Image (cartoon, rainbow, N blue to C red; front, side, top):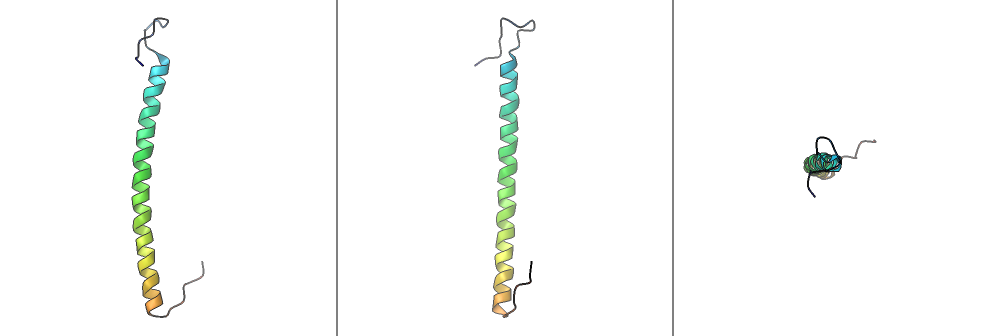
Length: 64
């Protein structure tokens, strides 16, 4: 696919522009999703640590 269009005054293909924008948006979304997954994993590890400390000291979990 290229960005040349014989039917456009500026010869710029709108589908190509749309493709480029969509590709950049998907790359950004993938990066954000990966960062969120890392943060979620760190929080899960922290929760597991806190739960183990509560279990070790025979403390019940607080109600949510």
